[in-house]
Picture 1 (cartoon, one colour):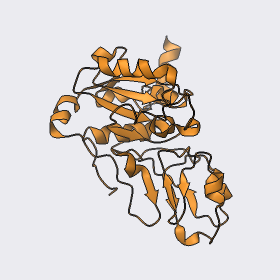
Picture 2 (cartoon, one colour; picture 1 turned 30 degrees about the vertical axis):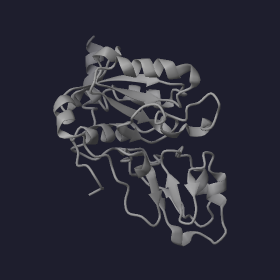
Picture 3 (cartoon, helix red, strand yellow; picture 1 turned 180 degrees about the vertical axis):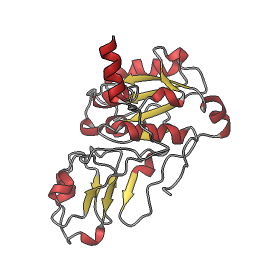
Length: 257
């Protein structure tokens, strides 16, 4: 016991100071893509052809974060470096169409808060039921990480619960396979109204790499109304936290400041 206490004291305070302090991210982290159409070479389709999910379109250069796997293939294949991954972890939006980033448009519109009534209901205590609808467990692992000592989701009054009847909403991962469609819909029906739906990861938003497959529903959107889209493959815990707190009105909503 004393050895355990000594080790814990040596480790010190490990919970992140975010959002009061900066989010500490590893150097290899790939965040919001930065597009520079002025570097595009006429007729070059290297990045678009290399993208495994068709997330990149040209004329004008644009990238759908809802499809993006945040792999480095586009960045590596572009000879002019028109696409590169930045270090910004803030990616979550309220609307699916806001996930499309364009070289000729303004900044990504970050998630805005729920209306006043919903914030009064969920702003101080939010209970969520997670549904893995055919995912690879990448996004699920990051959701589990939210409960560790570093991110400590519970300090914000947000918890995952075992029963949908005790939940305020659903967090859904995976492309919603045919075998999980009924289970997802029945789980949604079991959550008392009003309820929220959060789509986490490229698969839940667009179907990801299996989009168009006969056994996939191409994400949550065709089946349920989604209140928050959190892109990534998988999204970092800080990206998840940022989206959740913006949804609850705990962080400044709208464009980046």
